[in-house]
Length: 259
Image (cartoon, rainbow, N blue to C red; front, side):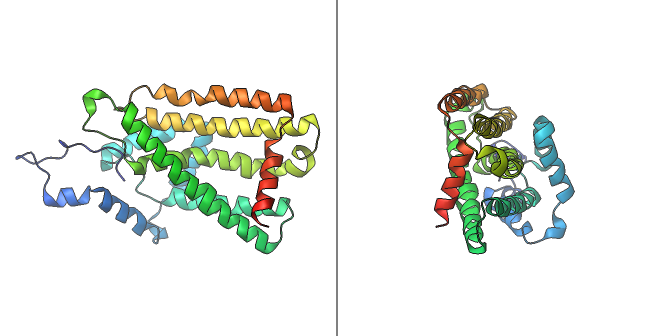
């Protein structure tokens, strides 16, 4: 789960890690510890996870400052507590059930939609994006003078979860209150409100992702992760000019999925 690996860290007098330290700091050991805590709710700090969720909206920089603190105290950047993942999963399930209610889906249709959203939209797409960002950051963003460090996949997935949460709240919760009465209508105000929510949600995702990688001191040129903003704004303006309604498309797609 460590996002960085150094061949010179925590060494003994002979320059090598002790067998105990080496075993404790392997990615496999970190992953095993993380997965084991998924089944021990009393060991999870849900209060701290809620704090992170709040500040991902109001001040995401503070969340990544805590990642720095974890690196200093526990010698790892990625989360060692699955509480955030558990709360995100609950949010995802509740908001998807709300989506099914707003779209007037039956019980089995809603369950089918929930399975699609959890395992394809969240987990499947999340694994793909995390892997892609892991590859790009290691291939193109690592500083030359720090080649003994690399971004590991666990941290890339944490950054995705951080960025995904505001997008989930905006598109799968806040938007629900406007779908039937405003957004799905064929009026200009309908697709303006809907597309603006999409602009804000995806903009949050891009910005929080940028903050996650810029927080790593051994990466360079992380500002390029903000470049998709230009394409996002251009697509937003084109959608308003052409009358595209992204939320209406999403609703149609969700209904098609559960047929």
